Length: 118
Image 1: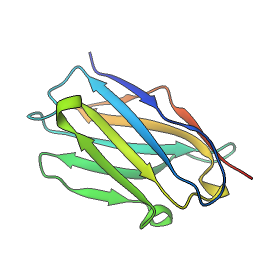
Image 2: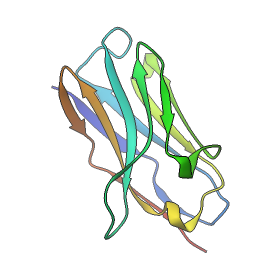
Image 3: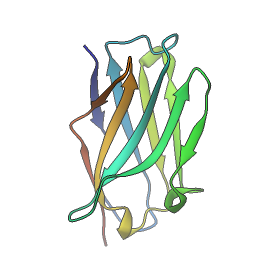
Image 4: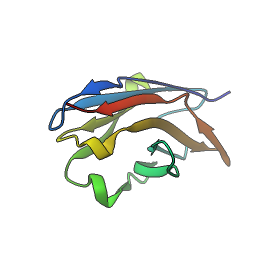
């Protein structure tokens, strides 16, 4: 069974940085075909894609609003995906959710709150 566990959210001032982690289990991180990414949902707003990658192709995609500020990466040995968020803005405040699409099914983590405020 695929499981995703996020960590790393918190409160940060505008202009600050945070790194989110998503530890995955239940599939072969190195050899399976899958996509993984981060979404976010702010109160009263729809869930939106933040960043994603496809394996093994290595294709990356980012929302326009985070390009140049956020970076998605992975550590194969740790079965972990990261989202490095720099130059954070108040409008980045949301619950951030890790997603994996593997073996034709969508899987979600429980979410981690990111609040950008002075």
